[in-house]
Image (cartoon, rainbow, N blue to C red):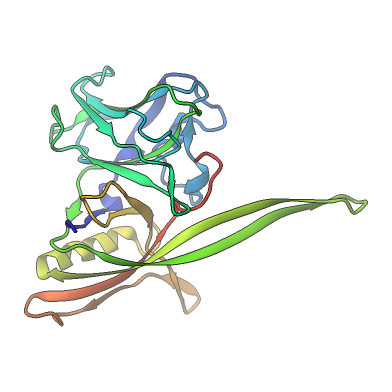
Length: 279
């Protein structure tokens, strides 16, 4: 197992971009502005879509912006040649990175992918003004959410995450004045993880900073449990009720594993494990 990567909400810059469809036909119900919008409490229902089976979303950051990692939650066909590009002009010809697109689901959960950009030819730590998510012709109308991170925190040790599967099922039920009844099944799944990691003091300080940036359960974050595996988990630290309010916990046991090594435990609940209509 390689190290784990934490992508903090304090480093997410995608939401700063003005997003437009530069190629293809925008779906008016799922507009381009939704591509990088992480402010909605219902992230699952807020993708950007095009109706033309191929298209490009152009991100304008207004000034040169560093991006080291992108995370995509997609509705693409597996193995589609999706690209993320950056450049000083709208041609975005300076950097061209391929995203490895797996099947949209595994074990009933949707799969999100990530790409580290620092090793890609044309990458610049000074950043570029424009980014582009480019999707070639697919058999379905492309839909996506995209998170862009200025930088990330790679932990010395890998996070051990024990999954706890929680099945939630709801329905919308209608009934006419004459008693006729019909219903829509809203079956969906979420995944809750209990995460444990043993870290040196330097990593502990980084975890503390990440936890603070999460604002308890307020801000969206991304965990990559194993940087050698193309899977990202988008979610929140789950809240716990305390005295009428919701709080989140980062539990630290100092130095039980030896000098300078602390054991940290925290919960993480993915927000992208359901079965939204666009995946």
